[in-house]
Length: 275
Image 1 (spheres, one colour):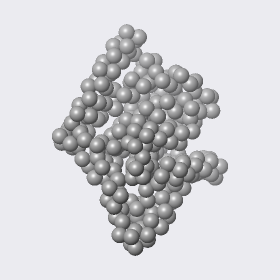
Image 2 (image 1 turned 90 degrees about the vertical axis):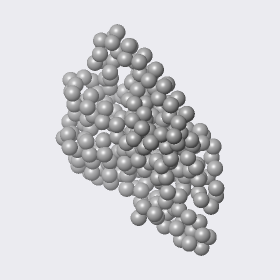
Image 3 (image 1 turned 30 degrees about the vertical axis):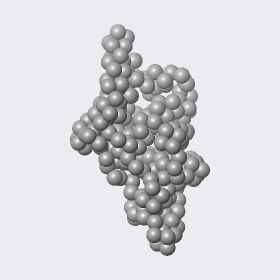
Image 4 (image 1 turned 90 degrees about the horizontal axis):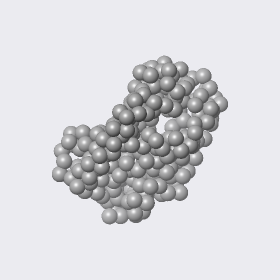
């Protein structure tokens, strides 16, 4: 099954189609199963684009048997001068710092009441098991598979320049959330995750980092349930403490990104035949 998916390398236009299928799946599941656990509706929603990727993979696999083309793996980890554990630790520190640094961007676009109701249902009203399963497990697995494993990998395989492919995959990742309030931080996180995938060709690295980001949101919402759903660290810490933490995170982010850049080399995310 995994090998079938590896044959499909969507272009930018096909990546837009995958996003459209995510949105269509969300609308269908919202109408068909309005009271079902969010983990179930989320999984079924993502079956729309995943089903398309599997179908297209079958078509490409049939062509590949004739032409001799090989599938392009999702994972071919390459951490440069770093060991795997060292890379994951540095990348995790960078992600933690990034979540603090980008937090003020949520103030650029106020959270609409309709979106606030959706977030309150997902993070506060839903059972803890359902939130953990959907937000901390399924979302990192399925969204990274789709946005980095399929879209970014496909655009790079089609010889799009790395930063253009990373930017487009981040934009599609943000657009897929269908939430203007979340769009800027999602885009910035998407840039970081895309950069990590380009440098390492390790999908598990981006899944881990995505999971870490979502776990932070889950923990904050459960530890401070009386806070507004759009509240952040600035609403928890005293002003002076917050800005000291913020400045520290800026420094940590710059240092960790520099180290990751210096110690790793871009992975060759391209088709074995096309390379």
